[in-house]
Amino acid sequence: MRILIVEDSDALAEALGRSLKQQGYACDIAGDGLSALQFVRSYRYDAIILDLMLPKLDGFGVLRELSREADAAPVLVLSAREQVEDRVEALDAGADDYLVKPFELAELLARLRALVRRPAQRSSPVLRHGGLEVDPRSRTARSGGNDLNLTPKEYRLLELLLRRQGATLSREQIFEQLYDSGSDASDKVVEVIVSTLRAKLARHGLDRLIVTRRGFGYMLLSETGNPQPS
Image (tube, rainbow, N blue to C red):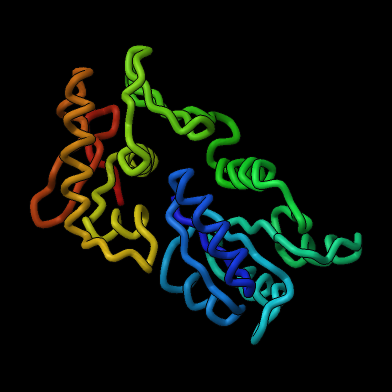
């Protein structure tokens, strides 16, 4: 999953980025409000961590702009402004959650997981496809009760394909969800991740789950075995 960190403190932004990457997230960092909007209009994010006291355009301005965007990602405000009035203003402006600095990393990660689960996973947190089960809360994948032992990138690819099962995703689309904009990797790395994921799925009898559509990309067949509209 891809997260945008909007924070003008380089030290905090980099520390957050490192922690989130260790949890398997891809992260982009914007140091001001205008840059944040450029990122949002260029990439699709699963969640945004937003400071309020930003140069060029403050967090409230960012929230107002995001409210005009279709399918905007959920926003976790992370701010030193601790007054009730600030929290109310941010939530009314479109924030989905609010955490005051200083904060505990474990709490931030828990709140972020909760945001990412909503609303798609509210009724059914575990993603299922036949005997395959993917749990976004624990970031684990199992088949027939056996752990697939996926790497973070393999897990994220499988979750992405499950959420879009039946739709064809290009190599470039997958790369954007697995890697941040500062990555030195080429989108050809997607082929490697697909290959290693397929090998692990094959050990559990799921070798035909991921289909290659040459010239188009990859897809995970719907449970009916038929492609669905992208």
